[in-house]
Length: 192
Image (cartoon, rainbow, N blue to C red; front, side):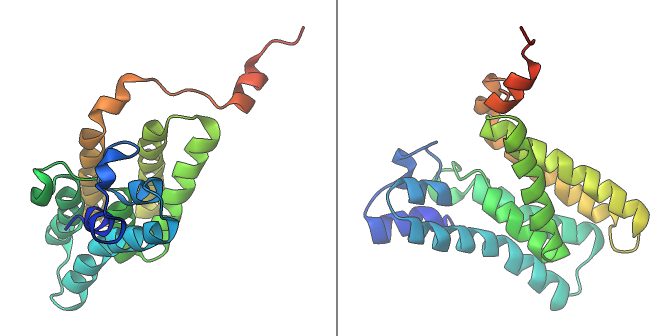
C-alpha cells in the first residue's frame, strides 16, 4: 500500500509524485506542503515493514531464510507497488521499519547514523543512502562475529535484498558522482 500517495490524495488533494523526486514517498508529502502529514506518512511506511516482520516472528515463529523473505517483501512491495503501475517509492522508511522489526531500535539507529555520516562527507543523497547501507553491512559483519547466535545469515540476505532494491529503484540517479561537502573541499585545498 503506498500510504504516502494516498495521504497526499485524501488530505492534500495532490498527487505527491509531482513534487521533489517524483516518487510516492513520505518526503514528497512534506514537499507538497504538509510536514505533520509527512510524519504520519513516514510512520505508516515504516510500520508497513515492521508489522509483518514482528507478526512473522511472534505469531508464526518464522526464522532463517523465511524471515529474510518476509523482511524483503515490504520493501519490494513499496518500491514496485502494483497500485501505481510498479512505480513506488524509494523504500527508505520501509527499510528502517523492517530493521526495527528485526533488530529493535539498533537497526534503524545504525542505518541512520551511517547515512548521516555519508551526508556529512558528501552531498548526493543517493550515494548517502547506499553508503549508509554499506556502513550497516560493516556493522552486521562485526556483530555476526561478536554475537553469531543473534546476527545470523538471514540478516545478510535481508540486507542484500534491501540494498539491491534501493539501488535498482535509484538507478537513474547514479549518473552523478558523489560530491564532497564544502567543508571537505576546504581541507583538500592547498595552502597558499
